[in-house]
Amino acid sequence: MDIVLLGSTGFVGQALVKALVQAEWVRSVRVLCRGAFPEVWLNDPKIKIIRGGLPDFPADLFPVHDPFVIIHFASLQRTADPTELRVNWVGIDALFKRSGRNLRGFVYGSSLSVHGQGAQSGVHADSPLLPETPLAVSRVECEVLIQNQCEEREIGFALLRSRFILAVNDPSTLMPWIKLAKAGIMIGDGKQKFSIIERKDYAQVIVSLAESYKKSHGYAVGAFPVGYENPLEFGRIWQSIRSLHGLTPKPRLAVPANALLLKALHASRFLDSTAVKLELMGFDHYADVDALKPFVSQDLLKKDAFEVTLGLVKASLA
Image 1 (tube, rainbow, N blue to C red):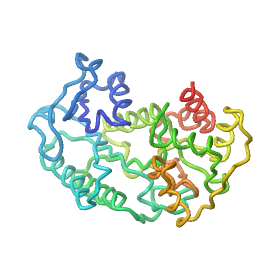
Image 2 (image 1 turned 180 degrees about the horizontal axis):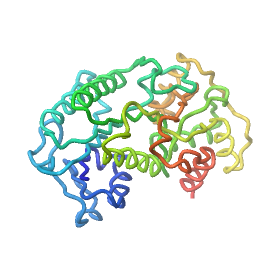
Image 3 (image 1 turned 180 degrees about the vertical axis):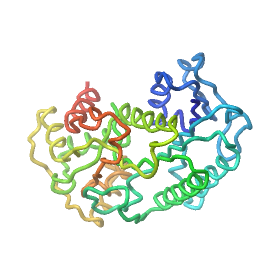
Image 4 (image 1 turned 60 degrees about the vertical axis):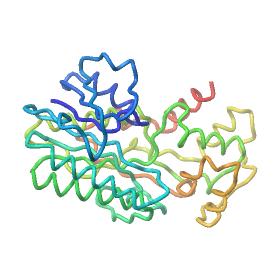
């Protein structure tokens, strides 16, 4: 089975390329890439680099005769003009129009944000979609397009809804958490819980779902909340970060989980790097991941979210 990968040089894509190359069932990884590609992979016999981007990609992106799976993690996420997010839908539409008959499945990196910005406790794939930001609206539009196209073709699809994807020194989530804890700033009451997954484990989830499309039946179909089975309690990791620095576990400043206060905190120059995540941090954001269990290793899903996160924190501080 061949893989067509979009978003190979991004935060998830870097781990995903490695996981796909190591998967014995993957014959080749066809990577659509505009910019520089890591030199370590340039001579890997499994990898074929195809220069270009969405929606105007080269004709040789797809295998001519062999079955393949599309894995899409190349969405535009940050833009000053929300109307530019339409390119996400246009890019996916172009993929379906030109993919031919050998497409067997489509894996799309969406987000738990499609269910809204407020508290989410134990949401599941069938929970209401309540997108509140332009990016979340774009993701829902893309999910609908993928579902409609795949159902029309009678092939599988997996819409992956993650919340916090962590890695050593990751600037989007882990480092802002460390920064808040060191400053003694607690968002919410500390009891809020999050669905988290380490980046390498997320890559394994994606590979496992993609592998299911080798089968003629029983393959992955639908939306899949992603994370470890038991969520992370924010206050627990916050206090551990404080302890690692020899600081009192008590907060110097406690900010209630109130949208107005959080948005005011966004404006703080001291915390401007955490702005993307702060609005979410005061509330529960965790999901029921049972839908993944038929396709993903139980040992992976049962990993201790706190221990995983603590290990990443220690590695980041080393």
